[in-house]
Length: 393
Ligand code: TV1
Ligand code: CA
Ligand code: ZN
Image (cartoon, rainbow, N blue to C red; front, top):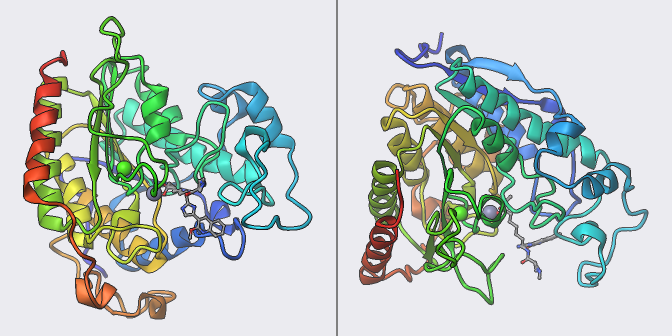
């Protein structure tokens, strides 16, 4: 009916669990698991599921979560109960245990199930890549890059990405992690700080005093001691408000192109946080669905096995657009689909405009001022080029 067919020459798998989408962080909390429902609604309406292997994910086991997280933290996470009375937003209790229960990382009903399902989808995706049953595995419910070994942070409790990369490392000597969420991928960077088997590269809004998490400066590149194998294996691309598709594409292609050439990863983990899109409730960039998707297309052209993770994204209609477009890129049907949203799409009215590619003016009215001078972007490419001289492939 839709004319969408399986891609030639590669296999794509899609990993999700509808139970995950039933969870709520709280009425006013920006993280809405429902955006996953809206994304799937559009992906399925375009008929894309016929071109992929679809899996309903199981929850990750305690032992699987413990491949990265401390058992103290997991035990606490598994037993804490939701707050009976919602805590005052401003009264951040300074002695929160494991940073749980504040306004960013609230305790809600089914929290442990939610976390283990997100990790389960990421792990299933990693296993399909390791067994070569998939060339691209999609886990839009994952991508929770801030979680630490024994601490929740920035809406993230369990770091499904780290757990998935640890699985990839059982089969691949080197894994490249790329993060296009508007926030710095600090949890993943820190987890692999002292190994040369994982290179991390995050593009993010950087303003140490005013934007979360405040880390990820250009010269934060891994341990400073020269004898630590992880030295030089963290690439950071700090950006300012208002970056455009054209600038981002130039940076991404230059930087990722050079990294792949030098580091020669056997697999790629790409975090596709959609809060880097224009009009995001928390983000600051001017990226459009096309520019965000161009990063996925660029990685795909390198023919390296790849997991696509979700991540941030706080304007659900645009999250759904981006992850639908990126699913179409994974299955090679991006030039075949009609940019007018299918008539029968559930919740179609949520999208406001009936196109997959709204213009900046449609999204924002007045586009955000671009505070990224071309000279600064050139300096960033220059810095990364010099950094890569220290990296062995
Ligand atoms: C409850 C209700 C929580 C309304 C949190 C925005 C809210 C935020 C809320 C919010 C909000 C943050 C901080 C300040 C650290 C705090 C999934 C010293 C309108 C991957 C996480 C951002 C991003 C955390 C996660 C950040 C991801 N911004 N309204 N909270 N404290 N936290 O700044 O990278 O996208 O904003
Ligand atoms: Ca990022
Ligand atoms: Zn984010």
